[in-house]
Image (cartoon, rainbow, N blue to C red; front, side):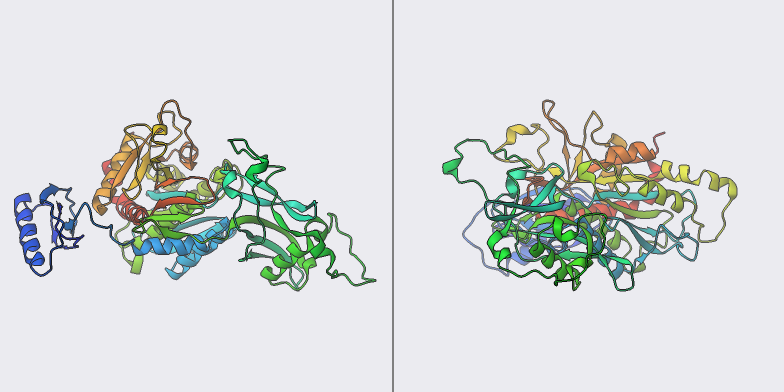
Length: 555
C-alpha cells in the first residue's frame, strides 16, 4: 500500500487495488497518474503542502491500496460500526440487557439458541451450524461450527465481559434522612466513585415476578427517566482539596421527599389479610413509590407480585460521538461493552450469508462473562466451569461424516485445548495528555490508532511472543493497525480474564483491548474508529486461525 500525504485538497478518498506481487515503482506510478487525473477535476484551496510518497505494508489479499490525505484535513466520518455500537451500549445499561441485546443480534444473523440443560446431539448441533447459549442471563457463549469439523480440532476463541463498575440497590434499600427519601446502594467493582455525583441516575436490571400460572418469571426492567441523584456538598461547606467520599454514608442517592409520600394513600385495603412471608414484605424493604415504578416497568398490576430484583443504577445520559470531528465516543460502560460488541459483531461477520464455514475445520467462539470486575469467581464468571464445560462438549461433537473413533474421543478435549487460542479482549489505557508521566515512555497508546496488545512480565496479562506473531498476522491480512502497552515498573498493573482462563485451560492466550480514557468512570472516552479496528482484527482472527494454527506450534 502507498500513501501520498500532503495533498493540496482535503482528504480525497481515491481507491484502487493491487496485489503484493506488483512492484512498488509501478504502484507509485499508477498512484500519481490517478491523482493527476482526479485533481484536474476539482478546485484547489489555498493550502500548499509538498507531496511525499510513503510506503505502507502490503497484504496478500486484494485490498484498497491508495488513499490521499492532508495532515491538516479533517478525519474521515466515523464508520457505521461506531453508530451501531452507540445503539448497543445505549440499549445495555446492565449485563442482563447487554446479553439480551447481543442475543438479538445473533438471532437476526441466524444463530440458534441451545441450553446447557439438554443433550447436545447431532440433531441439536451439527457442522455448519451457528448457536448460542446463556447462563444467569448475564453471560453468553456463541459459536459457529466449521463444515469440516472433526473431534479434537482447534477452537478460535474471543473472551470479553459484560459487567462494569456500578452502584447496585441493596436488598433492603429503604432509607430516610432529614425529610428525604433515599435508596441504599452497594458499590460494585472498582469505580471512580466521585464521577457518580451530580448525575441524572435511574435504575435497570431484572425482576422476579409471580405469574398467574403459579410460577415465577424473570423480566428485564429499565426506568428511562431520572429518579435518583447523589448531590455534591457545596464547596462552601467542604474546603478540602481532595474529594474521597465515604461510600457508605456519603453516596446514598436521594429519590424524593418524605412528605410527598405521606400525602398519598396506601394501596392496602382495610381488612385485607397478609400472607406469611419468611422475609419482610418487599414494601417494607423498599420505598413504595420506588416499587410502583419497578412494577410498572415489569408489567405487573400489584407490587406484591414482585418477589425480588437485582437493580443497578445507571446514567440516563446517552452515549454519543464527540470531538470536533466525531473522533471520540463519550459513554458509560466502554469497559467492557466495547469489546463485547466488537467480538459479537466479528463472529457474525465471519459467517455472514453462510460463507466462511465451508472450508472451516475448527469452531469460532465468543464468550462474554459477568463478574469480571469483582474477580470472576462466580457460577457465571470466567473462573467458573462455563467455558470449560462448553469446550468439553464441543470437542467431541461428531464430524460431518458422523464418524467418531472411541480412541480419539478419549483425548479429544485435551487435543482441542492444545490446538486452540484465546484472545482476552478487555479495554486498554490510552495515553492521557495531562498525565503522560504516568505511562511508560515507549508504550503510550493513542485512540483511533488501533487495538492495543497488553504485555506484562509478571503475567498480569497472558500475552507472549508466539501470540503476538499470530495476532499480528491476522491484523496484517485485514489491514488494521496494532499498538503495544506495558505499565511502568513503579506502577500497579490491572489484570483480565486472560491469565485465569489460560491457567485453567492450558490454552494459548493473548490480552488486548481498545484504548480509552477515564476507565471505570461513569462517563468514559474512546475512539470511534477503534470499534472498526477491533471488529476487523477479530474477524481476521476467527476466519484465519484454522489456517495459521499449524504454522505456529511451540511445544
